Image (cartoon, rainbow, N blue to C red; front, side, top):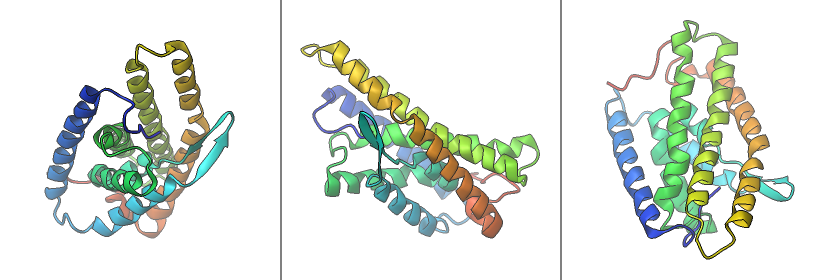
Length: 221
């Protein structure tokens, strides 16, 4: 689900960097408002590595194959740390494995990072239900965050590629290929939702502070 170099127009590439730069600045400001901004760096580093390695795990979904993304999981567990973590992970994926590209780094960061922040907000909704310590609610919102984090990333990926199909190629064939590739992520969305639900339940039981506190939302101001 990485957009490589040379696929989209330069205006879209620059727009991607503009959006990602703004969101990265916002995320870092929110992080700096925490009582101890450095406390979650080890956790963020660990999950950045997991995000980086996830691109190796390919799942065959005929007629193609897809790989884990874990952006929703990062959003659920890391909150605002997720966006810089995704930027760093994508940078190393582009340099070391040619997944995506350097010119499209900002665009790919927006595609995966914005849904990660949305996944964080979805997971925090459990506090508004009135029973944030409930295991079922924790698992449910963890599942929704993990699943929808990737789901919205797929929608952004699909929309950008379809809108920017060059005029000199067969648009129908290209759109069909993009649609099939996007639909192939449906089972992965369910898998990532399940993995996220399992992880948040585990963390809730053994180290709940890694979720930003089970009893109250993460404070950012």
